[in-house]
Image 1 (cartoon, rainbow, N blue to C red):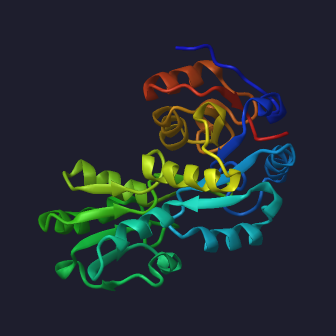
Image 2: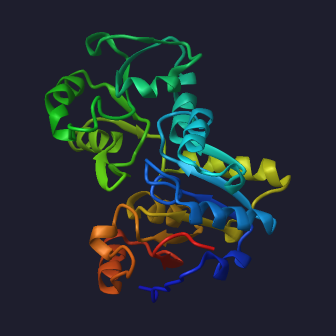
Length: 286
């Protein structure tokens, strides 16, 4: 395995890249408040001519997520655009006009379906399932859905997972996401389409956005992913063939150290994942 490099400032890496595909939750905010230094770092990169596209596994389309970022204090100058798992999910559903959809997820995610030619139905008559999250992620886990998933699997229904994250930070704790339910369904033998990281469709959408902003094709050697998840960010970047800056003070903080990364723990984690980032940093700081 390549030797891990720890950097304390993004400025040391920035000159090697033209484009940043940055994770959102865990890198630029914690679900409650913005990380001001991270926003400043991305803004400084843009001031130097770089392009920043936020790449989120949010099950909502990019525009509603932009408004959410405004509310928690993420500065607009930190990014050029945002693409989400919700955007890709809409594309999947647009290919199934008139479909009967059984939705697993909270009311706040319903914007994902705005304007689509679909019908909400009970599971018993649905054509497919769209899972955007848990009905109540404050108290539930994926295990609470086993009985429902047994019924879904008995009908051999396709599940579209609108957020492949298993957990995310919310303030100082972790809450479960749609990926936890989808992974359980897949383990049961169910068919799942994952629309976000680490899977290619979301990256392809992000790169098309970058090319449009730049007015030219994007060289992957000049693209850097930034994220705090080994499962989605590090492995997704490796599969795409781009470098990754791994932020340790995110969902893996308890495993690898928040402010002083544990090198042995990091090496073990990356070896198990079969993917190694370009560098590691405690937090995204310019």
